[in-house]
Length: 575
Ligand SMILES: [Zn+2]
Ligand SMILES: [Zn+2]
Image 1 (cartoon, rainbow, N blue to C red):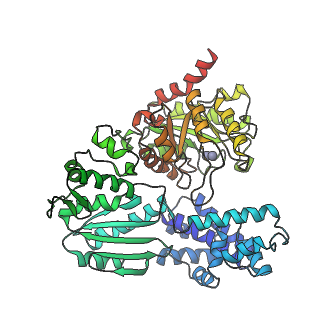
Image 2 (cartoon, protein in one colour; image 1 turned 135 degrees about the vertical axis):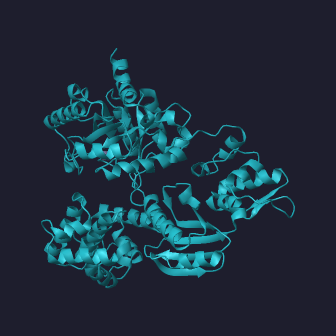
Image 3 (cartoon, protein in one colour; image 1 turned 180 degrees about the vertical axis):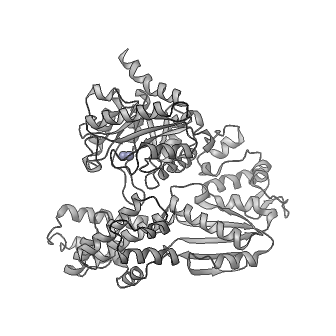
């Protein structure tokens, strides 16, 4: 996360804390507004101080200075310690914002999850004004979610920690070679803790540097070969020092998964060998192995990409030449699913195009929200025609420049399964993404029928974020995904792999189950500004975990080919 985004998050958190404290609403709003200004104002923080924008009064500027100097806000730290920590857990319950938490505390003395749970079952919350039976049920479900998700972190958050840590270690102790292992290296959608390996013969300097990491709030353990630290957000990092000549087996072992390692070990046993984190042993001796490749090779296997190491048949693939040639960043030529200021995005066409260019893409599919999504500024037919003209004009002006913009829409799937807009208008898009944005609590069967109906609509070309889950926040809507994917296959609709870090939806397990059935996939960053076009890389990680090859993703097509693919079904249907 860049510093502007970090400060933005701090301002939002500050507003929450003030609300929790029952502060003056104007003060709360000032922080929310400041956060929003930071979101839209794409300038470095220092520059912002030179000419403060509207709403950045003296106190806000002081916060910015303080943040630049030390990365924290003293007022916030003080405010935070004035509350029992249980309140923050309560705020993570979906639907319980700071205002409601403050009321529960004031009226019923509830300040942690256990008390909240008790008050749900003994009827005290139902009796409270503004909380009905339905909200009690939601709170009970929410408590379960919070408990399930506690101690887990989004991949993207772990990634920013790993980036900072590795940069620090390379600078402070350059003598070692560093590798992030564990579920992070396997690109799981969430991770519980981080495992870092340092290959070196000089351990003490590396350990000392690790324990000095500025993000650490606590040392849990420190030893010669293994130390653990805890970050302020609760993320634990373990660092292990291994001799360079056994890095191969160590990296295999600490990358996991457990299931993958079990398969590897039993394969070794079947060859009369013993595999552990120190080496591949024949009797008492193990040959030096500095790379993973040597380990796999010695077992008669091709090297398995970490993303695939989940114990789902990849060891067999590696032994029989059946490993997929996984799609890589170099295969991506473009993506769909970019919002602009026409709906709830933060940049105009030009800004999004610049972002696509920076990623080396040759096409970008613009798709704002449709008219049903009024909360997100969905486009009415007039606004759509206006955007089409703008896209045509942009493409004319930049003809031969290596980037083409495609006209798309992210159409809401209405509760009856229909799309927004009349056919005459739908026909004018290069592509239509159909997504569910409302009515999440519909019964499973009804939801399944609703989405299948949208998939069967001849104008639908992509099914957007199929499960509707928010990682560590909200379970997906109840839906029979297999039936829906069946319908996508039958109707030639591509399935989105939404790259937003908290979505990563379609789930990679489903992709893995469906990868060889002929379904087409497409990574959509669901970008609302140019930087978040790079969320495509998170989607790529999920595509790789799903075992996809370049040819299974629309993203690897040229602009002409992808346009032809989008057109094919419609003409096929009509003819
Ligand atoms: Zn959406
Ligand atoms: Zn979207």
